[in-house]
Length: 94
Image (cartoon, rainbow, N blue to C red; front, side):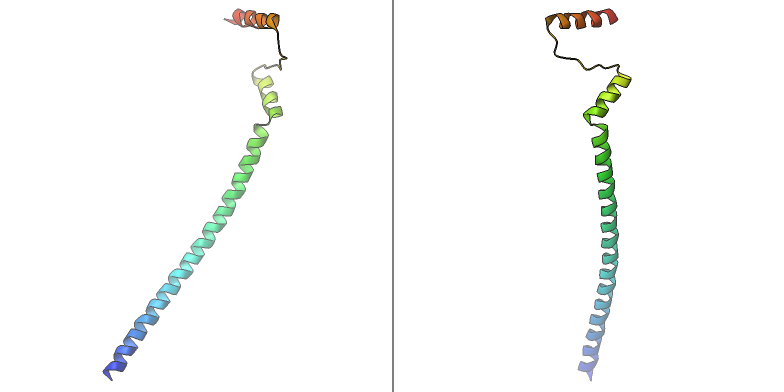
């Protein structure tokens, strides 16, 4: 009789441990799903930011913004006389 009680006690402890493990596995599964959903959201946000960066850093956009804010003009390759003219213009501003 004593052996049956010990066996039932161990079986009860074993089933209790399995129940707690199953509960913990379910909690971790839910957390994993939440993390995967957050990862998808962050990847979407990253792709959005990359596309914004590509738009902002495109040569056409940089040219437009620099001409608007810096009064930048596209220059051709200049010779010695053009370089002297640029130096004289920059010397006038100082």
